[in-house]
Image 1: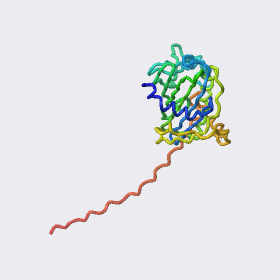
Image 2: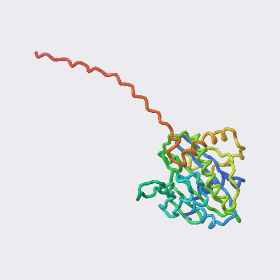
Image 3: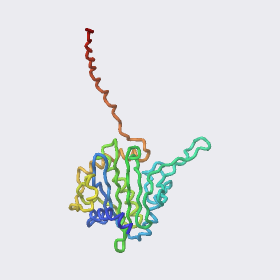
Image 4: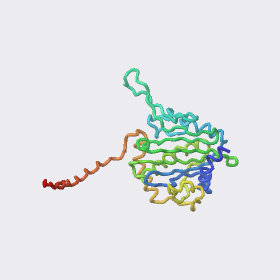
Length: 269
């Protein structure tokens, strides 16, 4: 009962958006202060087998999208408050006694083994911004197969242009979730069917919106993905490159000084 109440909205929304496609991912909503990514894939494995692989990111997350350059340094502690973390080994030539570093990519905020995993955190270059990201992954039986559904909702203050960044984040997250699905025997992820943008103020009505017909690969979307690819790839591995150049604020114009009015003197009678 608790599980169905907590995830009814997410499950209904993902099911509506999925349509007839068994594997897809896309940016389904964008605004100046955030975006929503959504995807789904079916695999020929049981929910328990999917869960066993899901909580071992070193087996499916790409080394190209780590800070250390080695996916073996990634771990998820699947308990409330647990860490999706990365160990940064001590570099060669470091002073004796120096301890290894680390990165908290996300924090586990809900866990229902074999059914649902929810994490909070801003991935890759989003970590340097004032953003909150929530990734919900649902594992649901689908006949003799298992459906993996996910939403990544990001919002807050960001110095990047969302129109350029969101497709890059979608591409990288889709790659990771696609590798997870392929490892479990699923198909490669494809572009999602088009869905009407969901305004930030209408989040509670998202489950009632029906997607439009499947859309072919648009030239505008392809160009947007390619324009953000280089910047996102450069930033996600180091967390320092491709940061936006902040322009200095113009000096405020001096306010004109108003001379005080003279106070009339009163002569004694």
